[in-house]
Image: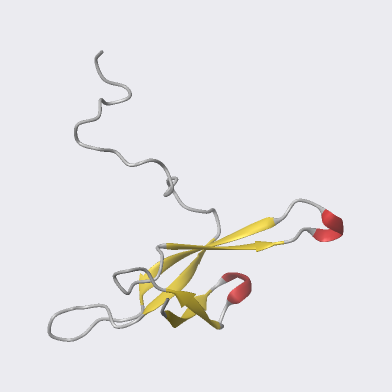
Length: 95
C-alpha cells in the first residue's frame, strides 16, 4: 500500500509529518485517531484529527496536498455510523 507524508496541525502532534496510508483513490482517511495510554494504566485518551486540503491549485481549485487539523471536541457527528441507503426507511418516519 502507498503512504504519504501528511502534516498535523494542533494538538499533541503539532508540526509533525507522519506517513499515513492512502486509500484506493489516493486520499488519506477523513479522520485520524491517536490513542495515548493513560497515566498509571488508566483509560487511554484518544486525540482526533480531521482531514483538510493543505492548499488549492490556481486554475481548477484542486487540492494540493492534505493536512490533519486537531479536533478538541471530537467529530460533530459519528462518522463511522452505518450507511444510509435511499431505499431504507427513515428511523423517525411513518410506519
